[in-house]
Length: 388
Image (cartoon, rainbow, N blue to C red; front, side):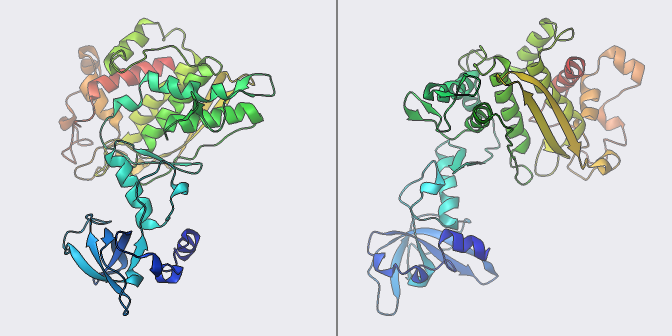
């Protein structure tokens, strides 16, 4: 923690140690640090504006502008504060936090929150992409048209690979304009860096439970499969959200195309996700689709950027969930999918009933999820078994 503070240039979080009390003039945006008696190691920061000059005793008056980080509501509108309890604040949010003028903990958190309220769930920190889970679908961010937008973006930069193929600039320009932070942008950078340097690339996806790691990994795999499906050219598809098929329509289209007989490599790579989720994901108290295992995915490409294959290694599966489920949670999705989606013939053959009929599933009292159609997911899982 001390190293982190030193890295940010904030010693003990005090502006006095930074030698800038003279900058605290009326109108200056600041963060006021409130020290809670019951939480001495967890101060609360409030965004405020200086409304008076600094007094001889090192105090001044500030007007509280925001609810604080973390939220607090027991503050006066105008308060008297010590200079040592203030940090300079940034005027507005930025897409890349390495460009923040004042870089410290409350400034970072506020920047993420400000962008989130504007509908921007992605923010860069140099080469790192931070994603704030919206806990709701935002289809407009992930339409095929958006994917093609990022896929084409850096091709205009004109970097040539060792094989003479045009790769994409790390700057990811499109029509002379920088692309907004996005998970597709991260995947495209890794793909074209691989082509340019002729070496493997690694993308690490990390975060606490419910942060969105599973969905992010699926989005990256979708983007890489798209790029590798045509040797780096965007795959044709619906251009807007209105043109995009629903999940059930996509499944019907895949079945009609005879994927059981022959599936492309990129289709097989994407079809591995429903299988992994069915037998490795479950509902927890914090997350309806929590991965109860670790996953390491290797995707192989030719020297021309064509997708050639993939390998998935799993580890640390939470096997105890098979025999015991905590209240309010579920065991692995596959059991509920089978009970909800099996045909009448399968129900008779396998003596299936509803999920509540089985001791394995009725321990927690949770059978259905509002965010998941188990019957449709069962069809996806069965289709994936045939495809992969």
